Length: 367
Ligand SMILES: Nc1nc2c(ncn2[C@@H]2O[C@H](COP(=O)(O)OP(=O)(O)OP(=O)(O)O)[C@@H](O)[C@H]2O)c(=O)[nH]1
Ligand SMILES: [Mg+2]
Image (cartoon, rainbow, N blue to C red; front, side):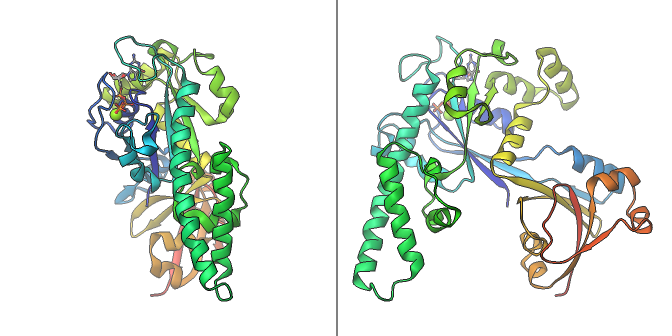
């Protein structure tokens, strides 16, 4: 189960260029709108310095990082929700993602056509967001019709959850009509849960990726980005030059650091996107070592050990006995598990223990 991020945006925003850079894939990218007709899917390893360090220390037979899956779809234009352009067909592919990276064109390049005329990332964001809201509204209205029928036909016996689902969808629909994405409607966690199955696009956490000119990649104030900061808040906006990321992706790994430093950048776009994605989704990483196999896993903060074990294998949740836990920092400092055992630094935790970021966990279970 990897983190799944959908890349959306207007045509020619640079989605496929970014996708290629992230996945080092070969999705077609061109200066003509609607270059992408089918979706592209790529899986990449989560960059993880702690995992590399653990691998050096523990020297396991195998080392498996967590992964992120990126899905690149066709550009969305005005009317997409009514079937304009190509995007509508592909909205289905983003319904399943955990989070959305919304690419906004901030670079200006006369050789790259712009379907709306000129560079204006905030307008583009609003056009795309409006289409997503219309698509969601349609889903809400259809579901409300169906649920209302169910409730009317059997009002006495209908489950409380169904009523909550119905009522929440009604409210979500009203919010959408007023121009508010579902994620900004202040739904309670219970309400969010009640409508999760409908996979509303505007309920998903979103990160705006400002695709800036190559020359602005390291700028403190890249042209076009200010209005995005004001509207969405600086934490939600990631400034990236997809072109530069593409160049970085083509370099041998050992040359990347120097290339980034030359440009005044500290991390690759992939690093920053993954870090931002983890923060957005409230994810943490834990590690397991079993049978000489080291592996990284990602879970939502607050996950209990037994539940985390279930992510690895359902048998492990069912037969959970206890977990032996060490913190990454302790292991990095004392270097071996034997040393930690000797010092009494290996904790024994039960099923209710909340997994910590960087925990190295050995799960004991019976089958
Ligand atoms: N100058 C410049 N050109 C870019 C940048 N990013 C993308 N491009 C160019 O813009 C054009 C469109 O890029 P794509 O990645 O194909 O855009 P897309 O969003 O996937 O477009 P569709 O699939 O048609 O929706 C290509 O010619 C890219 O080389 C950038 O940062 N700077
Ligand atoms: Mg494309």
